[in-house]
Image (cartoon, rainbow over all chains, first blue to last red; front, side, top):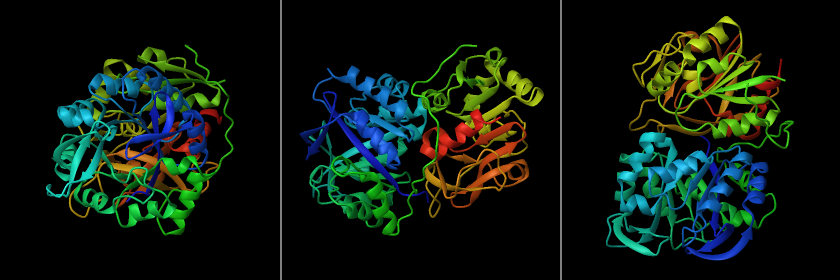
Length: 271
Length: 207
């Protein structure tokens, strides 16, 4: 299999990067561009950026952020937040998204997944699922939507399977009760999806120590491990995370540095 | 200064490729039709979409004829990315349309099912670079690149003969081909961070 990916997650609320705990915004941690420059330098394998404002008033500003980020981001960039139509997905891809993340609107209208996959391919559609424990469901978890404010009663594994059948190329799973809690991923949840699905599964939510990343891969069987909050507080953080993962025996991408002469601004010409 | 034309055949977006290609100070232009390739020193074909839709897009815009004339006839440097590598071959199991046919052989689909690695092949993998490859000059092993694909060039025939690198997804496949003025990679250098930018710099800047 491919190397385990380390993914940095940026949550954008009203145009600024924030941290969350159990889906409630907590600290403003700053500017998305600084964060991405920092991740680029320190070997993160992929970046996920999600718009989580309560209103749609900040979407234009968010799209501007995505476009500017894509100029600096030379790893895959997944973009989500309020994707309710093929047109909305297209707006993100035009601004530089390599993949589009769907969540609430896909639950409400599952045909959305196939519409986006039909135009851009399955590799472009990431199905994000927010899960909360629910003993009444076969998998033990139910799907939460609308920033975890609304319970759907839908079984998580059942929904993930449907999403993949409809064309999702990856599944990003976040445990609502672990989000921002620094106690590690919900490993049983991650493993149940990673073992059952044919597509890559990304674990998210709860990383408070580097060893949680390793647990997500080794015990959770996740193809990729994501974290947000922890990266904002540690210098050279993604590099340290990678080194920890490598030392634990995981097959991860090594950091290499090449001297590349890049001008500050691109030069376009018609000829 | 080299003039770099990026082939637009109407599928998906070219932004990621343009972002990376614009790093090296070249004149960069999007070619919507084959005519626009006429004055290019380097032609880049970034691949997105499906094989058939892509080949139909190339034909309807006159790119296929222009590419063959410029690249095979005049020796203009060709840089293919992902589908831009697969188009070089005779065809693909993904569709029915013939490819450009500059290389013999057919693209195959990765097997899926119990025990097989996940398809599409998505993620970072180390490539085994062939000694003396020009496009990988200056890149030290281990060199990891980002792949996203469900079809691959098998290590046989022309693909094997002109392989500049191989990678592994359950078994070895051809990750890059290189022949005279033709360079093409299955992975996405524009999304492969510093190693990818280094490769693009070599292809765009070196004489």
